[in-house]
Amino acid sequence: MAFSIDNYDELMALHRALMEAKFSESPNDLAIQGSSLLSKIANNVVESLTAMDMEKEGESSIAKWQKWREIIPERREYKIVQAKLKSESSWIEWNRSKQIEYVQSLFSPFQASEEIICDLLNSVNTNR
Image 1 (cartoon, helix red, strand yellow):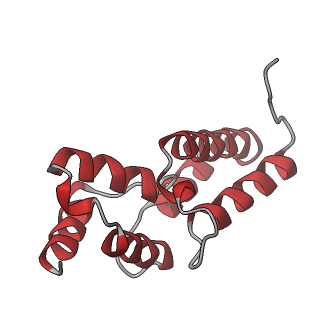
Image 2 (cartoon, rainbow, N blue to C red; image 1 turned 45 degrees about the vertical axis):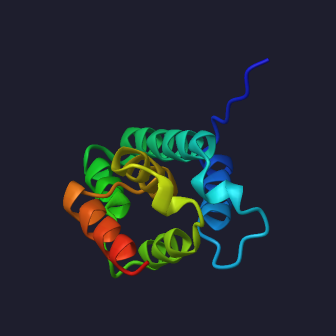
């Protein structure tokens, strides 16, 4: 049985719940934030919201969502990911590729530039 949400308000409610779970400052389930499965779901939800907005509002809605998805160090979500990485006990044992993959999962549905990811990795790895 497949699960789908075609109602914008219901999809937005799911999006908000995912954002709360992924970017909680004091999560109960520590595995949620970095889950690759949840990362995929969060990205799919935002892509679906973008498509629904495009149908209602036109092409300009794509730029609105793209701008929203850009992660920068001043954002609350960036700071939460940074704190999560600093507390990740096995982080130092991972190779650079695995670290990048994990950071991308943590940030989803946001999208970080290569420069942002490198700066974050350097910051976290230097302060260990």
